[in-house]
Length: 242
Image (cartoon, rainbow, N blue to C red):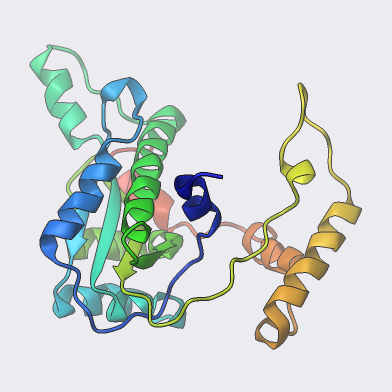
């Protein structure tokens, strides 16, 4: 196993950080590693907002008022990844065409581009002893986050990464077994046995921290009710959804 593969397999989310501030030149180095990721047709349909001021961190935290976003306050830098077709509008008009950004494909292009870059950023930071956590919870307050960060039309917040020097290293969280995720040639339907088995694995890993809930019950909390419409409303406001 190479050092790179070992690093990737040792990933864990870090939510508690020391007071150490990552040098700005390091943050740039990590982001430049992210920018090197694959991107659809080299369009690079995303942007990154680097947040390090206590004022902006506090505003992001207050928008959610949720303990799950507390890592924003304690991190060295909070990087917000933005799906971005603002540059695309300029390019389309420069070439005399009608700009038509609405639709699922545009959202997939921007989301995948940003996600690939973000994973590179986090791996780069981890390779130098830093840690972080990717926070998709931002989307539940898309309108507020857009206002805080001054996001223009044709842009929308996807997720953030809280980065810093870990104050606590958690064990590596067990994933679903290989056979439940990877299939040869054709998709293989799953059954409740797979879900129940992983519920037990997660319960053993979490211990008392997750008493009263299971992995599958948390999935039910996400997809067993109508979705939070903050992202949809923001996409409409930013002219990316009809």
